[in-house]
Amino acid sequence: MKHLVTVLDWYGPYNYEEALTAAKSDFADGMYLCVGKVKSERGSPKIQYVGIAGKELKTRVGDNHHKLKLVTRDRQFWFGEIGSLGPPGKNAKKTNASLDFAEWALVYFLQPPLNNKKTKSPPKRPVTVLNRWWRKDYRTPWIKRPHPDWPDLIDYLGLEIKAKVVWFKSPRRMDVS
Image 1 (cartoon, rainbow, N blue to C red):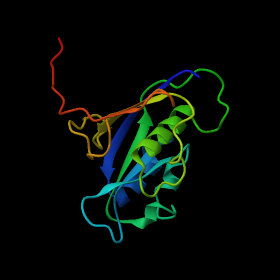
Image 2 (image 1 turned 30 degrees about the vertical axis):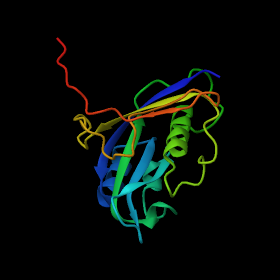
Image 3 (image 1 turned 90 degrees about the horizontal axis):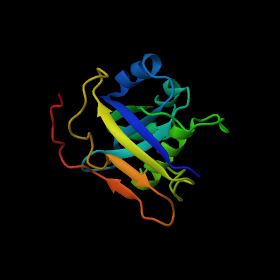
């Protein structure tokens, strides 16, 4: 199988009310990620859940979601959209393959505590996920990643080779003329 490379542009952070509004008006299909704490948790907020929304992001981020309602403190949402081309050819599944494998890589390699699916085995095909973060104005980039556990890059080449989960140091800004 060919290697799938997906760039994910993440927007946020949104509090709960902002997330409901943005999910209804600004986003169609994509991914969502929830950072926060569950009821008895102490310490810093952590990545709790990563999900895929197909065409129904607005129905996935509300308190109807069986896992997201467990995150009750310091809850933030990030919405991700594909910023790269998908694999060529006919889609065998309803879910976009780029989103499906990007979610699988994030869930498997980050192991968010509230995810149960896609945590037991690595993706079935080689996949690279590059995460980029943007502010809620959709054009201003975050210079630093929004959470220390959220990698810049996941590069999984297959079962025979160890995956690289990469956190870049603080980026150098260069002017290009």
